[in-house]
Image (tube, rainbow, N blue to C red):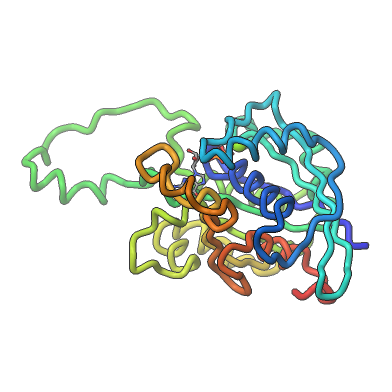
Length: 284
Ligand SMILES: Nc1nc2c(ncn2[C@@H]2O[C@H](COP(=O)(O)OP(=O)(O)O)[C@@H](O)[C@H]2O)c(=O)[nH]1
Ligand SMILES: [Mg+2]
């Protein structure tokens, strides 16, 4: 038995809940071959069913509020060798992470979650505005528009103006000091909404290096703390809020899913989890 608690990190809108919904669907429906196969579910079935129902109908999954935070336990096994793997995830609200960044506090449960065996799923959404532009970046555009000499509008600093990658690096830095247990952890960066990345698509790792260089550099330079892989995941298969929805609805639901990265098969969203589970016997 290999009992793993995988922690999930990511700001609001980074694709966490959609990933869990798609995961539950592929495990439950058995439409595609997966590296992990479902045994049984312990915990909040109702919540998983609620998010998976929306996912199957190609609707946006419900927003996770802080009151709505749920712990999900999925019992699975590896058909290749019969090893049992228990996956425990919190579906935390992105608001919790925003609050942790701003107030420098977190709950005892959150700390406890990192003390057991298991890895980290860190979510970033490829369908995101660029929030890390500096004055140096926009200077050439200002120069072209003739507005160069104007005084920039000053705004008060709030935690909300901090770019996403700075906040994510900070959340990871929390893990490097007490009360968190210091050890090397496997970490998967899930680049969600991979369908929106323009062709020719870079590898997920190249995407991370290009779009979130600070986060990429931080992960690369802390090998004693993080053993990292990057996956591109389209858990929904496309934009369900636009015209694409009609096409998506016509597909076998599991076939909408796309997973790109090491040892991943096209629709197998369990590949990153198998590697996170990290037991040599289990194929990592
Ligand atoms: N295009 C596209 N959008 C996605 C995909 N997965 C999630 N999204 C969108 O990203 C947004 C945030 O997703 P959600 O799972 O609620 O993020 P959470 O706040 O981290 O739980 C929603 O608008 C989703 O519809 C995907 O595979 N493709
Ligand atoms: Mg959510």
